Image (tube, rainbow, N blue to C red):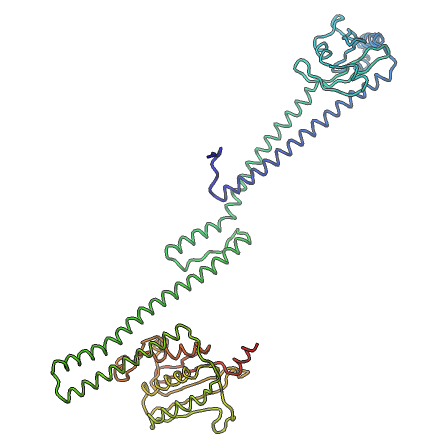
Length: 502
C-alpha cells in the first residue's frame, strides 16, 4: 500500500487552496524556465555578436602574427602618453591568443616577459579543433580551468590563428541572480495566493457550513429550520440552498401530515372502540340477565328490543366504517350522468314524509319560474344519494322539527361548468370550533345526544369523502344562532365530458 508524502487535506477549502497553489507554482516554474532560457539566449547572442564583429574586423585586415606584435608594442608605447589609452583599448579583449600554424600558443601581445599566461594555455589546450572553428567561423563554448568561455578563431594571412574569447562568468551570474529573484517573487506570490484562496474559499463555502448546521438542527428535530440566504455564495450555491429549502418544506409538510394522520388514526381507533364497546356492553348485560332468568315477561321483551336496537346501531356503524374505508382506498366509482335535481326531489319528499310540520323550500331549475332544464353531474348515483341523504338527516336530527329548510340546486361558474347544492337550515348553528371539526370522524357537536339520535359522528365524514372522490368541494357557513348552510360543489356532466374528450 503506497503512502503519501503529505496528508491530503480533508476540507474542501484546503483542497481548493492546494489546487490553486499547485497550478500557480507550475505556471511560475514554466515562466521562470522560459525567462531564464530567453535571458541566456539573448545575452549569449550578444556575446556571439561581439566576438563575430571583432572576428570580422580582424579577418578583413591583412595582418600577420608579427604585425600583431608590432601593433601591440605600438599600443603599449602610446598608452604611456596622454592620449594613447583609447587606442590601446582597441586591443583589450577578455582573451586574445595567437596560435601558430600548428596550433601552439605564441607569446604575442603578452605582458608577462614574453611567455603565455597559464589561463591562455589552458584555454588553447581546451579548444578541440581551432582550424575547424577558423574554417567555419562559428562560435564555440569551451570549458577550461573550471570556467566557461565563448570563443571564435580567425586565420591570419601567414597561417597563424587568433583566438578571441569572452568569459561567461557574467552571463552565469546574471542568470543565477535572475533565478534567485524569480524564486523569491514566486514564493511571495504563492504565499499571497494561499492566504487569499483560504480567505475567499472560507467566504464562498460558508453557505455549505450553514447547510451542515441546518441539517444537524433538522436531524435533532427542528423541522422548521431553513437555510439562510448566502451573503457571499455563488449562483450554484444559491440554487442548491433554494432546492434544499423546497425539499425541507416538503419534508416538514409530509412529517406534519404524517403526525396528523397518526393522531387521527389513534383518535379514530379510540372512538371506534368506544362506539363499539358501549352497545356491546349493553347487549352482553341484557343477555346475561336473560340467561340467568332474572327478567320477567315484560322485561324480556324490553331487553330483546334493546339488544335489537344496539345490534342495528352496531350494524349501521360497521357499514359506515366500511364505506369510509372503501373511499379511503380511492375505489373506481361507476361514473355516469346523474340528475342532481331528481336526487334532491326524492330526498326532500322523504324528509317531508318524516317531518310534515317542517317548512321546506326546494329551488330547482325545473321548478316554477325557472328554465326547464336539468343539472347533471358526472358521478356515482348511489354515492351522491348518500351525500344528500346524510345532509338532510343531519338537519332532521339536529334542528327543531318546525325550523325552516331551504334546498337549492343551481349552475355555478361563468360557463356553468359546476353544479352547486346549497342546504340552509334555521337551526342553532355551530361554533367556530365545532365547524372546524365537523368533518372529523366520530366528532359530534352534541355528544350527550348521541344515544338519542343513534349517530356515531361519521355522516359528515362520509359526505366529505364522497364529494372529494367526485372531485368536488364541500364547505360550511355557520355561526351560533344563525343556522347552518352546507355548500356542495360538483363538476357538471357536460364540463367533465369536454375535459375527458380534450
